Every structure is written in C-alpha cells, then in structure tokens.
Length: 92
Image (cartoon, rainbow, N blue to C red; front, side):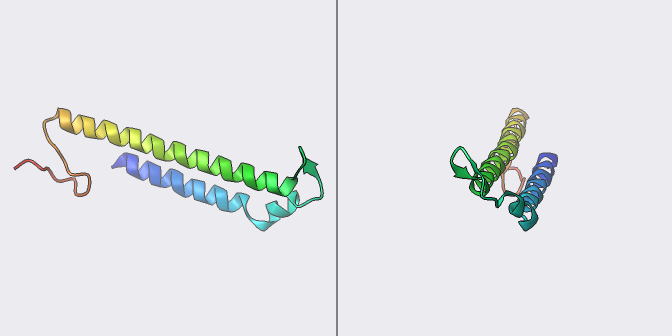
C-alpha cells in the first residue's frame, strides 16, 4: 500500500513538472529563430521535454511494478494467495 502512495506522489509530481515545463512563459523563451543542429530551438525543447517526461514516467511505474512483484512474492511465500483487486485471500 505504501508503494502505491509513493507511486501516486511521484506521478503527481511528474505531472506538475510537465505542466510547468510546457507553460507559455517557458515556451516563449525557446520560440526564437535560432536553430540547434538544424532544428528550431522550440521543436528541440518540446521533443526533449516529451522524452524526459516519458522516461521519468517509465521509471516511476517500473519501480512500482518491481515493488508490486516483491509484495506478491512475499504473500506467496507466506502461504496466502491474495487477489490483486480486493486484497482478499483466494484460499477457500
């Protein structure tokens, strides 16, 4: 349960970071006639921000999946088989 709340906090922070990086004041800074490696600075900025946000989201969710797998392994080692949806035991 604690891993889920941490993941929720990370994804919320990631959303807020993305919203901040894509606000018009920052976009105006990169909306210049300059080119970096032949690509307009604004397009490069948008692509880099997009790629970084996806990578950070993958890391946040990947850590949660790994922690979830550990929780399931601990539950199975304890002899119980819990449902991932209800947390209730499937033992009859």
